[in-house]
Image (cartoon, rainbow, N blue to C red):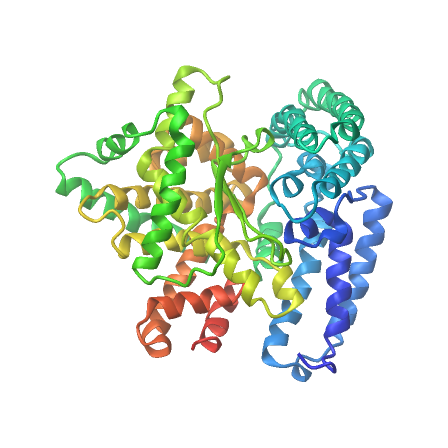
Length: 540
């Protein structure tokens, strides 16, 4: 990158401005100058931020793309989206007026607890600052939230709020290992007291008058597609692509069931009955991580950078309501450790026996293997290992397209079956197809919930009938779509990668899957619409 690059100084300003609004994002990316900082969610502060973002966008527009190298033209587009996406949240969807979860998320301490990037005392000091400042964030929430609020947002915020004290206790326990618990205790108690008052207010005043009004609407949904993913494809085209993929996956599942002379529900039932006991979920997941890594290497599917260490742990209490399993990867700026943390959500002892069994059935051995492929190898963890080593610009280290990230991981599930994972039995493919049906339904539910007036119950029935899910996980999926409309990204991204492979594998990569996959991974996480251009130019 030449010193005369006209984009260079503005790139730094835009990224710094983004981190001013979202310091937690900076920390998760490994930019530890922002340790311990909380966002200022007051109306005055976010109005100032938005006005400054407008000015930065104006300056960005004055830079003629023709004066930039091809890769920097891409970066210019990424910088635009880095500003337009939070502006959408502030001005269009008005999240800070509608969603109490945004405020609770400011108190997440995971990056300090799981990343060994600095001495314990420094990380504890950052957590103390977060805890000490959290009551002010909750006060800003009380002033800014404008009820009646969407009911699913309130209900999930209550679940998260109820789990946060356990998370805070983890911070104190962590500090105790270094004899620093006394520094955490006072701020923790104050944070818990403020949290209790906030949760009590939500439960007493906002929950009774909450409504079903969560939808973005068609116009805002189309804008959401652009600011999050750089996509201008009409919503109806995306719906048709998702419906077609759903039909293909259902047809293949029916074909397997017919060959085995059972109905599809019985075929899936056999899979779900084969689940680990509740106490063995983590041990099973750890074994599957090692299996997946060995499979990627032995089948030459992609390069595995070194070092590569992935720990498997229980999903923290505050995240249980939002996640089945997830990956906490190393940030692209975090040069101290490459460890990934693979979180698996265990059975909640408070659930009824029926709910516990439904959850274990949804985490059966076959599906847990498929989830591990998605979250770890060759999915998210491998992708973020490559990102740390290949991102060539500040914009590409910071920008992340969900359709590129989740699309890659979902594509990897199908790739593993094509490469022979679980060969000799139909179980692995059935598990992959079941998850593919889930992702197809997410795309259709997102569009239905936000543009077609669907209720949560209608979306729940979609997951139950088309993805063959039990009631509890189906309802969780439907509720997720109310606050996470972008969960269309799995199928959208997978289809784009499959299309690129079909057209580019032979002419650009000589038929080598490893070379094609390494090129996709070198691209970073840009908008999925740029996939062809970036993969083709990075062919080696």
